[in-house]
Image (cartoon, rainbow, N blue to C red; front, side, top):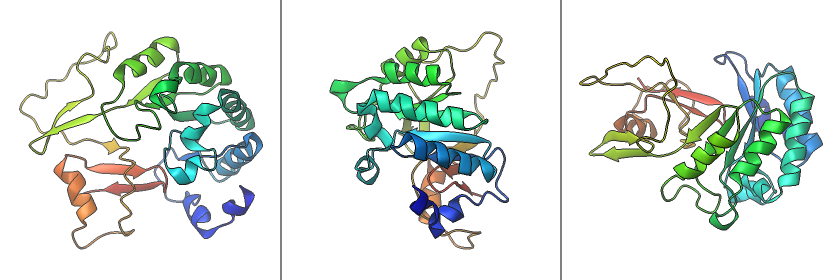
Length: 239
């Protein structure tokens, strides 16, 4: 939306100076041409990759027929993805869900549309829009998508926390280890995660904090040391 692009908030988000490379800009919308124009504007400002949001379940996003609301219109999904991929020379990726609701799961069809349109990789939240962030992630749906397409699939699943410790990530046996992968024995060692897309919108004050911030402390309690909020393009490092 050209009008929204001129707001102070949008200009601040698009200011990529000093950001860690590669710089990825996420866009959302329901009009193919507006999405293509937005992608071109982001690339002109230095974006090395464009990520399309078709996974956000927020009402304010879905009411504009954007985010996960697009999963109800596969033809429009195809038009948007094709328009954006053809509009820019940088990689275009897609964030999506398993469908609008459990009754209308269409993740495999969406994934094939994305691959045919030229999407570089797919980030799949293993829940429908109706499920939001509740219940167990659909690892069978994620596996079906992975089996159906050749492009990389990044699974957004579950982290099991027991007694304030990360006990498991995802479902055991849900990932096939590639041939030739190096095995590292971490038994008895403390693992400090790297970047974690928390997508929690912590909304903590910006800048270097001299006092304790509860949002950060809560993440540290679960072993999360670094997050990057894709909505504000804000990296947070907890030291």
